[in-house]
Image (tube, rainbow, N blue to C red; front, side, top):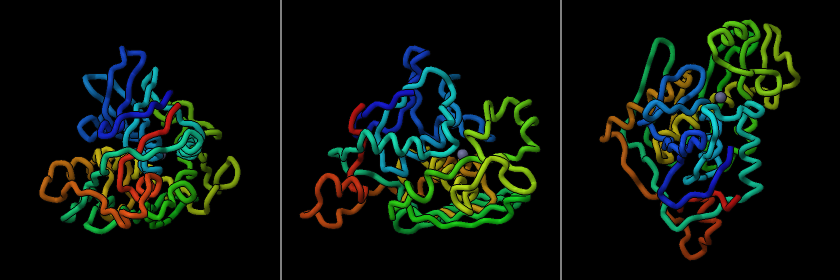
Length: 282
Ligand SMILES: [Zn+2]
């Protein structure tokens, strides 16, 4: 996989170098079937497990990037978004000349399915409140994150994906979690993780936040509003994207206000989200 800087206004675009550079923009229009991971599809061409990379882009404020990949599956790495974030920071992120547009929520949108729930509400910044309730040893966990506070790198990016040892064979038989291993996921037995200590006591719910940020990137604009998710997952996340994009009266495109125009240099603008940003180079 190779990431390339992209022009302002171009968004996040996947490019299959093994298929004549066929391009699949990361937007809600191209969401494919969703189960254990989020996939994108256009004209039958697929990109799978895109959510961790997309999450890293949103978390670090990258608006425009070309993702070149020579097969359909993105690398799982250590099961978190931290290796991506570290790579971005090594290369650098530069502010672009175009003002960033956010998708500002004007009216609540809620999706409920059984005991699963996800809703989005008007509010300043980008806040997420997530609660989960999984079988032992996870149980109930809840966390709140304010993305504007630049907490993504330290609080969210490092949280790894997880799976139950008991489900492993079943999932593998279904062709899912291809290559899941103790190196790229927390593997759980009834008594706890079988592969070493957690990175956070509530790593599981933090990973759900990581996934949600990636899935909501498919709105095509950074969200401005508050998200509440309870026992949700990729299917609920992308259902919210579809509902929001369909209900044009529930949001507007808005510019991030410039707080201190006189003092704002390019770097401050990028950090406060006033302008779009891209990778500095490769
Ligand atoms: Zn995930």
